[in-house]
Image 1 (cartoon, rainbow, N blue to C red):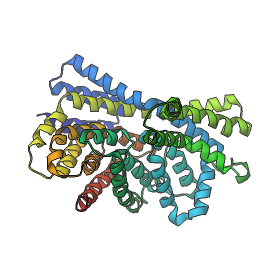
Image 2 (tube, one colour):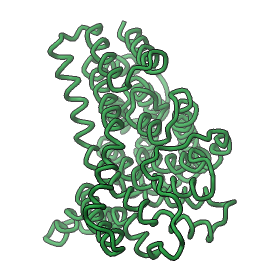
Image 3 (spheres, helix red, strand yellow):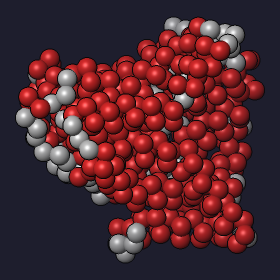
Image 4 (cartoon, one colour):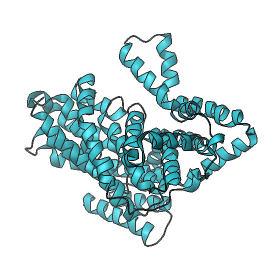
Length: 437
């Protein structure tokens, strides 16, 4: 019965948004309440679950998204994104530009959380798309593929690190094998898959539309890169320090503080205000007005992503993930495939990659020791499954849809299909690696 309610709920959500033209956030709230009630939750529990889901998701990303929008606005308005795009074009040429951007996203994605990487990369995508009249989806989705792969496969991201603990895997070996898997997955789900996306001419949100700035008025390349990617440097330095220095001391505490994603974004924003604003003879009042416009432009995006979090929490509290886990627990299949399949099903039903991965690991972990399968490959298989077919119950789906100004149907045919390619390609390569590891 729960599965039928879930399917009907997702169908209703799509109809409310596409057919009834109802606001997406309001649609999420309505569908979440109905799914909770029809799964036997009382009104008070539904309300509490909805509030918790919205609060948990927004609590973890609202500061990042708001600061990222502000930083992105500064990077775009100052011409820093235009400067970086010009240098990339000169270095790689139009023919290899997508590959250059994917490499940039992969490097950025290793130390950064997905949401941080998304908001940092988008101004660059917008600048390149606008400057050279290239469809934003064509160059943007491969970069999102690189960010998604690093988020699901590679430590030090939270889910892979937690899976390493559950499976008692070696972090270093997981990182090495993860890189071996990630590179072909990104190539297939990124630049190669993007060859099918040139027909999508959607213009992304106008928040970063600043027009062209004369070359002699652009900031220097060093200033542009340091302002756009300082969070990457700070968080990467923190990550490397944590891996090398085992005993905490005053130095590592300072580095940990600077490398915290929120602190890194605040520090970068303050630096960008000076380097890209005050130093360029812009007034503080005009800079603050620009930052306010940036936040206003993403306010509805925040609500929609929060609504997806509320639905995810209702599905979790209603016990659907537990039912799926129980159903698959006794199936006689290869441990790698079982981990991938359980995580994939929970991901499709619940929406959260982290919940899907950790739930699957809780089921599969007890059999890893006796299965003979490399624990690091189990981490990767679970991570691959947790990225399967992101759709309307996943905040990342709505983040991509709103930023790239796409319809639900278009988002399913681009973003959701890309995530599916990431997941399926990943498990195939993991099985090939299992022959040698």
